[in-house]
Image 1 (cartoon, rainbow over the protein chains, first blue to last red):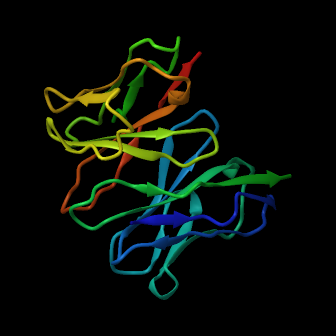
Image 2 (cartoon, rainbow over the protein chains, first blue to last red):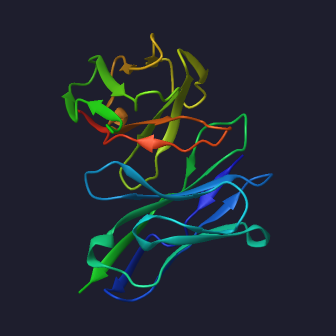
Image 3 (cartoon, each protein chain N blue to C red):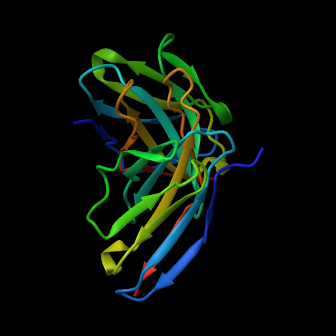
Length: 114
Length: 115
């Protein structure tokens, strides 16, 4: 069965500092990979996705993520965090063809200090 | 363009009552999904529609939960004999599924509270 692990429940960074949120997945083949962001009281917004090709993908709001097959990881990064980035971040996987559902991690809550 | 919309945004109901939650997907999106998000957790899959038919309902927790999409657009999630454990945010998402690439766009959710 597919699963996603986000090891960090809560991360605090200072504004302007760099950020890396970890995501590891378990799946029998190469899945499709996604990062979503959820602000308080809001729905999920798609930040970026990986389907195939270049393993470094760029997303919205200055975020990027790198797919590493050997480590079954898809970590999210941002070089300089803004106060408005404070939110909860979810990593998700989806099978290629057939299985259509997204399987989510439990999320990482990001706090940004001024 | 308009995104996925869900109504109501909040629903408070008494234990044992019946509720309906509505989802309007992005126009032209053939695939529609329902998820449930409990406090402190990631969303969990409930059911997936391709057109009018439920292609995968393996996430529905029991037979009190049912969903329809009669015309291949709007969907309604129906919960009978609600229990306090059904309290959660119910999220709807839609997707074009172009070339099998399943990019899902989410609505704001319906927060269901069962008292």
